[in-house]
Image: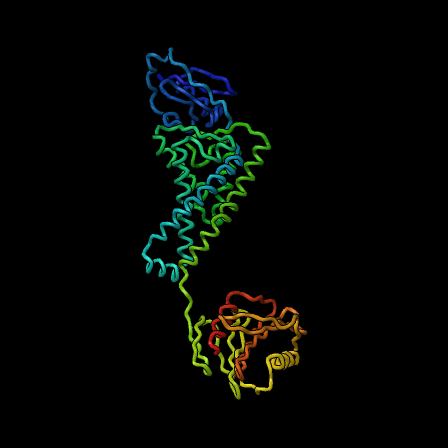
Length: 407
């Protein structure tokens, strides 16, 4: 018959036969979490994880050399606490998620350009969600690889945690199965808000001295005592790592969005006086306000501003300064006052002067008058910026394109 030893309070009891051991379990004298060992078994196991005790198999004859075999030591480290395990896993997956995300990003960029553009334009949200899910999956697989190669991970090493294998699987297969089960039963595939439910359930199991669902029958997760300072540093690293890596990847993300974003549709504006053309985005709305003289309004609510672009011929007796003062007076009647004097500017190779103005009634609303005289031809451009809007590249590009049509 098979003889068993069991551990109570750090002391070895036995040997006793299997029937006596099962009787102690049935009467409640021994808990299912009690560690047991018999001849031929490499390490201590919980009764709940020992198939022959659970199903009540027929006892086997003890090995002939049992009396000479040395019992393995009772595990010296306590079970790892739930918060240490949580922060260790958070640190590992935070690091590995961004590494996996880089791999997924480069894999996406290897797709044929027409297919890439189609998916990005038509299924952008779905593709981004799939990329996040793929990155999370790869992070779990990468941790399995790291555990197989080194027996630990950055998070486990920092928080003093080790995983003791209890089954007979190969090391690589053991860690792969364990990580996948952890992702399923512990992290619920990162599905929000289900992940909070699974985390709470696993927390309660570990807090009561039981193995997490993905460790049952597979592993014993032990934890060394670490100082409060080391624990606090580990929590800080776990919290700041995703933030730091996210900031570091911002340029790559910006580049990828720019590379995948199709160019905006364009339109052509023809200057009716010179016949020259200007090309700018179709989002700008062009309205012909011409009466006695040429005048166009080109604006966009989305851009928060626009320009009035006009032309008229003036008497030869009026110089640039006089004409400029007249334009400023017209704007003053409209409720604007100059915030500086006229300044020389160069727009698309054209020399001009510019006056910055602000609204008297709405201080956050600004305007600029740009004037260029070519003989009797007076070219003027009033740039208006809605309340709170600042001059940006879109306005500069529009001004440059339109002002390039003058002679």
